[in-house]
Image 1 (cartoon, rainbow, N blue to C red):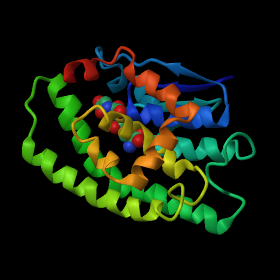
Image 2 (image 1 turned 60 degrees about the vertical axis):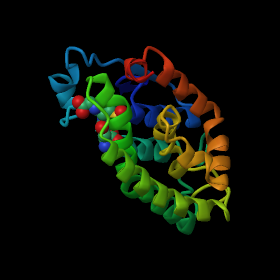
Image 3 (image 1 turned 90 degrees about the vertical axis):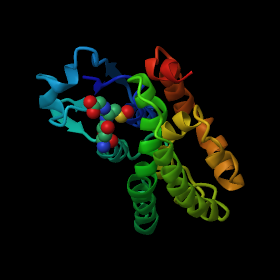
Length: 223
Ligand code: GS8
Protein backbone atom coordinates (compact mmCIF):
# COMPACT_ATOMS: atom_id res chain seq x y z
CA UNK A 1 0.00 0.00 0.00
CA UNK A 2 1.43 3.36 -1.05
CA UNK A 3 2.29 5.97 1.54
CA UNK A 4 -0.43 8.57 1.99
CA UNK A 5 0.23 12.25 2.72
CA UNK A 6 -2.94 14.03 3.81
CA UNK A 7 -3.05 17.76 3.10
CA UNK A 8 -2.90 20.38 0.40
CA UNK A 9 0.14 20.80 -1.85
CA UNK A 10 0.09 24.56 -1.12
CA UNK A 11 0.95 23.88 2.52
CA UNK A 12 4.59 24.41 3.51
CA UNK A 13 4.52 21.55 6.03
CA UNK A 14 3.07 19.18 3.43
CA UNK A 15 5.74 20.41 0.99
CA UNK A 16 8.45 19.45 3.47
CA UNK A 17 7.19 15.85 3.52
CA UNK A 18 6.75 15.66 -0.26
CA UNK A 19 10.28 16.99 -0.88
CA UNK A 20 11.66 14.25 1.37
CA UNK A 21 9.68 11.49 -0.38
CA UNK A 22 10.87 12.83 -3.75
CA UNK A 23 14.51 12.79 -2.57
CA UNK A 24 14.05 9.15 -1.63
CA UNK A 25 12.22 8.25 -4.83
CA UNK A 26 9.45 6.58 -2.85
CA UNK A 27 5.91 6.24 -4.19
CA UNK A 28 3.24 8.21 -2.38
CA UNK A 29 -0.23 9.58 -2.79
CA UNK A 30 -1.39 13.07 -1.72
CA UNK A 31 -4.89 12.91 -0.20
CA UNK A 32 -6.43 16.41 -0.43
CA UNK A 33 -8.00 17.89 2.69
CA UNK A 34 -10.89 20.30 2.25
CA UNK A 35 -10.10 23.43 4.29
CA UNK A 36 -13.37 25.10 3.26
CA UNK A 37 -15.42 22.52 5.16
CA UNK A 38 -12.72 22.31 7.90
CA UNK A 39 -12.28 18.63 7.19
CA UNK A 40 -9.02 18.73 9.19
CA UNK A 41 -10.85 19.80 12.36
CA UNK A 42 -13.21 16.81 12.34
CA UNK A 43 -13.15 13.05 12.44
CA UNK A 44 -11.87 10.95 10.74
CA UNK A 45 -8.99 13.42 10.10
CA UNK A 46 -8.50 14.04 13.85
CA UNK A 47 -7.66 10.38 14.36
CA UNK A 48 -4.69 10.92 12.00
CA UNK A 49 -3.59 14.25 13.51
CA UNK A 50 -5.25 15.11 16.84
CA UNK A 51 -4.08 18.73 16.47
CA UNK A 52 -6.27 19.16 13.39
CA UNK A 53 -3.43 20.32 11.15
CA UNK A 54 -1.80 19.09 7.97
CA UNK A 55 0.14 17.02 7.17
CA UNK A 56 -1.02 13.67 8.41
CA UNK A 57 0.77 10.61 7.15
CA UNK A 58 0.00 6.92 6.74
CA UNK A 59 2.35 4.10 5.93
CA UNK A 60 0.43 0.85 6.31
CA UNK A 61 -0.65 0.65 9.96
CA UNK A 62 1.55 3.55 11.04
CA UNK A 63 0.01 7.01 11.27
CA UNK A 64 2.12 10.08 11.99
CA UNK A 65 1.83 13.85 12.22
CA UNK A 66 4.44 16.68 12.55
CA UNK A 67 6.22 17.19 9.24
CA UNK A 68 9.75 16.98 10.69
CA UNK A 69 9.00 13.68 12.48
CA UNK A 70 7.61 12.32 9.21
CA UNK A 71 10.72 13.31 7.21
CA UNK A 72 12.96 11.68 9.84
CA UNK A 73 10.90 8.48 9.68
CA UNK A 74 11.03 8.38 5.86
CA UNK A 75 14.78 9.08 5.88
CA UNK A 76 15.43 6.28 8.36
CA UNK A 77 13.11 3.77 6.72
CA UNK A 78 14.68 4.38 3.30
CA UNK A 79 18.17 4.95 4.66
CA UNK A 80 19.85 3.08 1.82
CA UNK A 81 17.96 4.53 -1.12
CA UNK A 82 17.91 7.97 -2.70
CA UNK A 83 19.70 10.92 -1.09
CA UNK A 84 21.44 10.21 2.23
CA UNK A 85 19.48 12.77 4.26
CA UNK A 86 20.54 11.91 7.83
CA UNK A 87 24.16 10.62 7.48
CA UNK A 88 23.24 7.74 9.78
CA UNK A 89 26.43 5.80 9.00
CA UNK A 90 28.50 8.41 10.82
CA UNK A 91 27.63 9.36 14.41
CA UNK A 92 29.30 12.79 14.32
CA UNK A 93 27.86 13.73 10.93
CA UNK A 94 24.34 12.67 11.95
CA UNK A 95 24.64 14.71 15.17
CA UNK A 96 25.55 17.80 13.11
CA UNK A 97 22.52 17.17 10.85
CA UNK A 98 20.40 17.02 14.04
CA UNK A 99 21.86 20.30 15.32
CA UNK A 100 21.01 22.18 12.11
CA UNK A 101 17.57 20.60 11.96
CA UNK A 102 16.99 21.93 15.48
CA UNK A 103 18.27 25.35 14.38
CA UNK A 104 15.68 25.36 11.59
CA UNK A 105 12.88 24.35 13.96
CA UNK A 106 13.81 26.63 16.88
CA UNK A 107 15.60 29.64 15.33
CA UNK A 108 14.52 30.00 11.72
CA UNK A 109 10.92 28.74 11.88
CA UNK A 110 9.62 31.22 14.50
CA UNK A 111 10.23 34.55 12.71
CA UNK A 112 9.62 32.93 9.31
CA UNK A 113 6.20 31.72 10.40
CA UNK A 114 5.20 35.23 11.51
CA UNK A 115 6.29 36.70 8.16
CA UNK A 116 4.26 34.10 6.25
CA UNK A 117 1.26 34.84 8.45
CA UNK A 118 1.65 38.58 7.85
CA UNK A 119 2.17 38.41 4.08
CA UNK A 120 -0.24 35.60 3.14
CA UNK A 121 -2.72 34.62 5.83
CA UNK A 122 -3.74 38.11 6.99
CA UNK A 123 -4.36 39.48 3.46
CA UNK A 124 -6.34 36.31 2.69
CA UNK A 125 -8.64 37.21 5.62
CA UNK A 126 -8.67 40.89 4.51
CA UNK A 127 -6.62 41.93 7.53
CA UNK A 128 -3.98 44.65 7.27
CA UNK A 129 -0.27 44.00 7.58
CA UNK A 130 1.13 44.71 11.07
CA UNK A 131 4.27 46.70 10.18
CA UNK A 132 5.86 46.37 13.60
CA UNK A 133 5.50 42.57 13.58
CA UNK A 134 7.00 42.45 10.09
CA UNK A 135 9.97 44.60 11.11
CA UNK A 136 10.66 42.78 14.39
CA UNK A 137 10.55 39.37 12.77
CA UNK A 138 12.55 40.42 9.69
CA UNK A 139 15.24 41.58 12.07
CA UNK A 140 15.11 38.29 14.00
CA UNK A 141 15.28 36.29 10.79
CA UNK A 142 18.16 38.45 9.56
CA UNK A 143 20.15 37.60 12.70
CA UNK A 144 19.58 33.87 12.15
CA UNK A 145 20.60 34.20 8.50
CA UNK A 146 23.82 35.99 9.53
CA UNK A 147 24.78 32.82 11.39
CA UNK A 148 23.85 30.76 8.31
CA UNK A 149 25.98 33.10 6.16
CA UNK A 150 29.03 32.42 8.32
CA UNK A 151 28.38 28.66 8.30
CA UNK A 152 27.79 28.55 4.54
CA UNK A 153 31.02 30.46 3.91
CA UNK A 154 32.78 27.32 5.17
CA UNK A 155 30.50 24.52 3.96
CA UNK A 156 28.35 24.05 0.87
CA UNK A 157 25.31 22.99 2.96
CA UNK A 158 24.32 23.54 6.58
CA UNK A 159 25.48 20.20 7.99
CA UNK A 160 28.58 19.92 5.81
CA UNK A 161 29.43 19.50 2.14
CA UNK A 162 26.38 17.33 1.50
CA UNK A 163 22.66 18.07 1.18
CA UNK A 164 20.63 16.76 4.13
CA UNK A 165 17.27 17.11 5.85
CA UNK A 166 18.71 20.18 7.61
CA UNK A 167 18.69 22.00 4.26
CA UNK A 168 15.49 20.41 3.00
CA UNK A 169 13.44 21.53 6.02
CA UNK A 170 14.03 25.20 5.04
CA UNK A 171 12.88 24.94 1.44
CA UNK A 172 9.09 25.47 1.64
CA UNK A 173 9.21 28.67 3.73
CA UNK A 174 11.94 30.25 1.60
CA UNK A 175 9.89 29.68 -1.55
CA UNK A 176 7.11 31.71 0.09
CA UNK A 177 9.54 34.35 1.37
CA UNK A 178 10.57 34.96 -2.25
CA UNK A 179 7.00 36.01 -3.02
CA UNK A 180 7.24 38.83 -0.44
CA UNK A 181 9.24 42.11 -0.29
CA UNK A 182 11.57 40.35 2.18
CA UNK A 183 13.38 38.15 -0.38
CA UNK A 184 16.41 40.41 0.10
CA UNK A 185 16.99 38.73 3.48
CA UNK A 186 18.25 35.81 1.37
CA UNK A 187 19.59 37.54 -1.76
CA UNK A 188 21.67 40.12 0.15
CA UNK A 189 23.76 37.36 1.75
CA UNK A 190 26.04 35.85 -0.91
CA UNK A 191 26.60 32.45 0.69
CA UNK A 192 22.99 32.05 1.80
CA UNK A 193 21.88 33.09 -1.68
CA UNK A 194 24.20 30.57 -3.39
CA UNK A 195 22.93 27.86 -1.02
CA UNK A 196 19.34 28.80 -1.84
CA UNK A 197 20.01 28.77 -5.61
CA UNK A 198 21.48 25.31 -5.22
CA UNK A 199 18.83 23.74 -2.99
CA UNK A 200 15.87 25.35 -4.77
CA UNK A 201 16.94 23.93 -8.12
CA UNK A 202 16.84 20.30 -6.97
CA UNK A 203 14.10 18.27 -8.72
CA UNK A 204 12.38 17.71 -5.33
CA UNK A 205 12.24 21.50 -4.75
CA UNK A 206 10.93 22.19 -8.23
CA UNK A 207 8.23 19.59 -7.65
CA UNK A 208 6.99 21.24 -4.43
CA UNK A 209 7.23 24.77 -5.84
CA UNK A 210 4.83 23.71 -8.61
CA UNK A 211 2.42 22.55 -5.90
CA UNK A 212 2.73 25.92 -4.10
CA UNK A 213 1.92 27.88 -7.25
CA UNK A 214 -1.04 25.82 -8.44
CA UNK A 215 -4.53 26.92 -7.35
CA UNK A 216 -3.08 28.84 -4.43
CA UNK A 217 -5.69 31.26 -3.10
CA UNK A 218 -3.22 32.57 -0.48
CA UNK A 219 -0.89 33.74 -3.25
CA UNK A 220 -3.76 35.19 -5.27
CA UNK A 221 -4.82 37.22 -2.24
CA UNK A 222 -1.29 38.61 -1.96
CA UNK A 223 -0.72 39.55 -5.60
C1 GS8 B 1 2.77 22.37 11.98
C2 GS8 B 1 1.55 21.98 11.16
C3 GS8 B 1 0.85 23.21 10.62
O1 GS8 B 1 1.04 24.35 11.11
C4 GS8 B 1 4.23 20.39 11.34
O2 GS8 B 1 3.60 19.48 10.78
O3 GS8 B 1 5.39 20.68 11.05
N1 GS8 B 1 4.54 21.64 13.41
C5 GS8 B 1 3.53 21.17 12.48
N2 GS8 B 1 0.01 23.01 9.59
C6 GS8 B 1 -0.69 24.10 9.00
C7 GS8 B 1 -0.37 24.17 7.55
S1 GS8 B 1 1.40 24.48 7.32
O4 GS8 B 1 1.43 25.14 5.92
C8 GS8 B 1 -2.19 23.86 9.15
O5 GS8 B 1 -2.67 22.75 9.13
N3 GS8 B 1 -2.92 24.96 9.31
C9 GS8 B 1 -4.35 24.91 9.40
C10 GS8 B 1 -4.85 25.03 10.81
O6 GS8 B 1 -4.04 25.09 11.77
O7 GS8 B 1 -6.06 25.01 10.94
